[in-house]
Image (cartoon, rainbow over all chains, first blue to last red; front, side):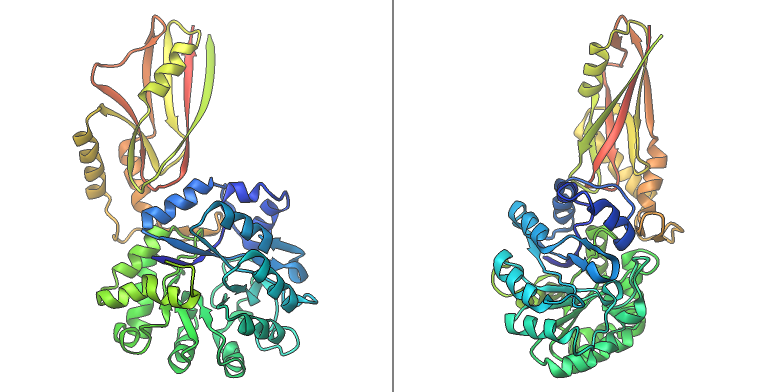
Length: 283
Length: 143
């Protein structure tokens, strides 16, 4: 199983490497709980049956003068936990962001790019700011996690994370593989439309708005999307994501298991689709 | 009167786990200079418990099965929402309820410098929402 959506915001050993991180985690990311050892993160993966997990950093230098983990720190974590699939983050509004992405992916062996327009405060379709980063990611052939939908960080502007803002990007970068988390909630219809129309758009299952993950995911899948739509039209474009530490991975995994998909589809959601997206190096 | 509070931690590895902490408590009591008094064991979490029972694996499994039956996942709990004070989802009502059923603390006498336990008493910290690093305290109080 691969979890396509985790943050290292609770890993004590990593937080301890940078005295600015505790404040950035609280003020920018909006997490106010105590840190836990790396062993707890690994334990969460084990308990949920997760073999590997994508870990997402966040560079908000322009918007908030902070990084909630930088690419070097993600590489540090990858060295200490082989189950971590590190993504890069660059601040699109920062000069040289595309070049930095190319450099860091090469230097640190990162597997994808994480963008969070709501927190990084940029327009997803901005040709001057965002397009050079997309171009670099496309040339690197890495997937891009675009944090669309509700953003629980207090400083996140959800209006910048509407999935439909990606439509021109999808047209202009037809080979760029984009992952929209949370099934795009609350803009599920928009995210669904984009994924159904475009084979390079993926959705992750980390729907979190109220109730348990099982309740939230079931409501969205049963009343907004439909089981059969995922089975027929999106079997290779949905990946499992937990959004840890916003919620524990075990309950996020239970939520997918309890949807009652055919075993082959569940296997694709839990593993195969993410493995295809990530390419070599993933089990 | 002497009062010493020891802070201890344990790394749990599973969602639900029964962990024998008897020897850790005994060692603390034995090391303290208290001949007559009390020892208090208290968890610092609301989704773990402290309980005492006979140290048998079958009973440990029965305890887990009992609390799981009494507070199952999937019910219409109110505690299932985003918790703004934490910045994460509060979706572990069953864990809290299991903790409430089992209790947070245990107290035993100290006599002649040793903890007084029944022959079959085993002190457990019960993980109810792991895996996590958990903290508990052992207070030795007496003369």
